[in-house]
Length: 432
Image (tube, rainbow, N blue to C red; front, side, top):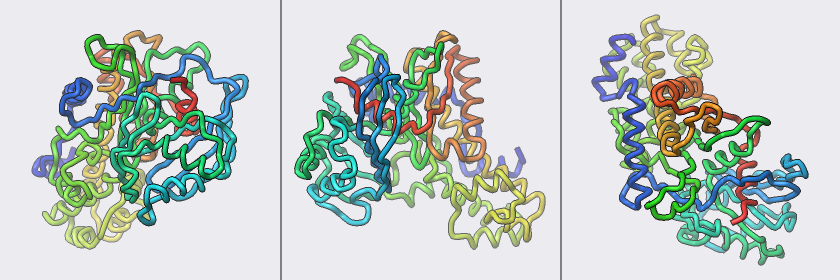
């Protein structure tokens, strides 16, 4: 690395090339505290469920995916060979984003959004991407909204039962079940359904690195640990882990978020924050005069920088359509190109290491993957994971080193088309 870049990062307490094994050990310590019911950063949410042992045949299920801004719904049909098909897909806005809604208004809006699926199935798989305590019957109690959804009366209420009641009021037959799950569990279940003929996996992990970041894995049967007389899927809420080294860039970004002092792990690696982190680092470098004069002036004149712009520059540094590329094309030196490239690459590279650390911790915690013929299946999803410069390639490289070579744990990263929809459908049909 360029000495000037290295010195600048060190001056601002940016941890370069974090040791994934040591970091994973810290995560594991926190995970186990959470499992024991002790105070921990990660929530370690119990789901009371596992992937189904048999293929799902000849069944239909309504699927809802309620995300930050969009509300998606469809019908998923499994044929007599267990092959799923998706129909009646619609997308609209998430209730409560545009204006605050009462409890009744919130679920009435859900019912309106689902009118095109009325009584087409008696089970619902509900991917609900908000902090939720899952109950043993598959319902979920909302702990609090995020992502600018405004419906305070819904907090503390059972989401599945409330939706069922609203649907009945709108002329539906009462659903037999409404199963709540988040996107990491949906990813895990989709991975569990992805097996090819002749392939067996020893366990499964679902990982999302998009706007936010989170992971789910299967905690094995653990004698002496409450609630684990059998195995079950656990949602970690890994983004809440805060025992990380914060650079000056991280602290500046954190201070401008809606909940400063929280979610340090997520704020260090997910898509919502990599653009602001890059912007903070570039601005500090410009203020310290580490680039040529005109480049410093133009960077200081920027109002923001997005992850798309950051990743775009790393993919094509001499592209003059890119914000940074344009600044450098007009006034930059080759030294400026090199400095900015290495600086932004360091921020993206740290994101990949964080992702690999979480996957490493989940794999170790599962206790599986010791037989190379039966690896752990990891389904990794999210726009940041798939689209940001070199992240998924680096994650796989780090896992090969830390899990396989150093710890003898075997794994495979898989992709499944429409994974979240498929996983939510499976979750809606699991017998409890």
